[in-house]
Structures are given as structure tokens and as C-alpha cells.
Length: 212
Image 1 (cartoon, helix red, strand yellow):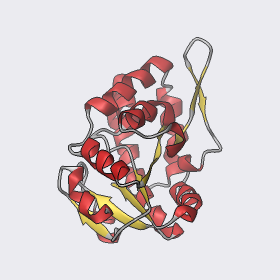
Image 2 (tube, one colour):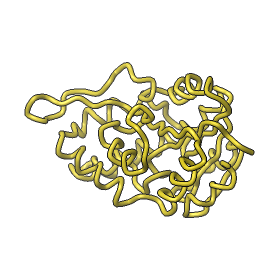
Image 3 (cartoon, rainbow, N blue to C red):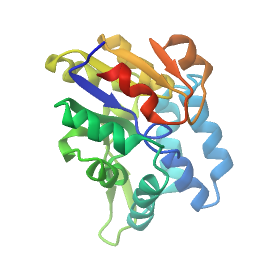
């Protein structure tokens, strides 16, 4: 099966971490945030029920976003760089679609050879002193069904596949995408049962033959 447009989740798919949980851990709120994140990724709670709550408690500043950006790259999943090199060499259109914070994901995307306009995530805003101000309250990716909205817009470019680990990645099916579940970092039953294809191999190279 070959696809024209290939979309990846970021957290627990391209990188081994959940960015929001790492930011929480940095300010001593790790356990509480992990519980909320898991509830959203398992489909127990709608994303909008946890998104604002997490950020209003953590209030990440500019320096913590820069720290997270470095961590995304340090904790990159095995095989990711090779997969992106192969896909881009084949002329595939590659995007990242994430409910994570866009400014923290952009350096990883740059490292993988993607332009900024191929990164779909939630913008975060800071005060002049670098302290937390807010996030993009209108972003579809901070709400349930947001990935279906983004995928629907991209699907005009051709056949599309979404690769990810969470319930939100399954939303791409609503827009007619093929969903490849990646359980190499976190193995979620709901994704294993509902994805069109599922792997628990720790390397992202395990999905490459399905994408070309």
C-alpha cells in the first residue's frame, strides 16, 4: 500500500516522551499530569477536558519550552531519522500532526528535514519576560476531533496515512485516512484494536515498508 501524504504524531511516536508530562515533572506535577494525559490518550476523557487544565497548572515558560525541544530530539525513537530520510527521498509529503506545543516540536521537525508549515500543533504564547501567557484556544488540536479536521484539509493532496500511539490519532479515520498504530513506546489497547495496522516494534523502521 502506498500513500501520497504521510502524517506522524509526535509524542510517544517520534519521541519516547509525552512533552506535557515532562513539563509537569519539571515543576513537581508529574504524577497528576500523567494520569490526565493517559485518560485523554485512552479515550476516557475528551482532550478539551484536560488540555486547559494541564497548561493552567504547569504554566510553562519560554525556557522550559526550549528545554523540552532539546528533550524531544534527545529522546527520539529508534529509526525515526532513517524513516524520514527514506520518505523524503521518495518524494513523499510528510507532516507532523500533534496536540503538543508547536514551538517545542519545531526543532525536532527541522532536525528531520520538515518545513515549519508541515508542523500542525498548538501554539503557545508568552509574556515579554518569557513567562507563560496562554495557548491558541482556537486550535482544533486542543480539542477532540482536531486531528480529523487537520487530516481532512491535507487529504486533498492524495491518499493519507496517520501514524500514532493514541486515541486522538484514530480520529484521522473520520477523515478517510488509513491509521497505522505505533505501540513501540506505549501499547494502548484501544489503538491496537481500532487501527488498520498495528506494531509494537520499538523501532519506527517497522512501519516503513507499509508506507512505501
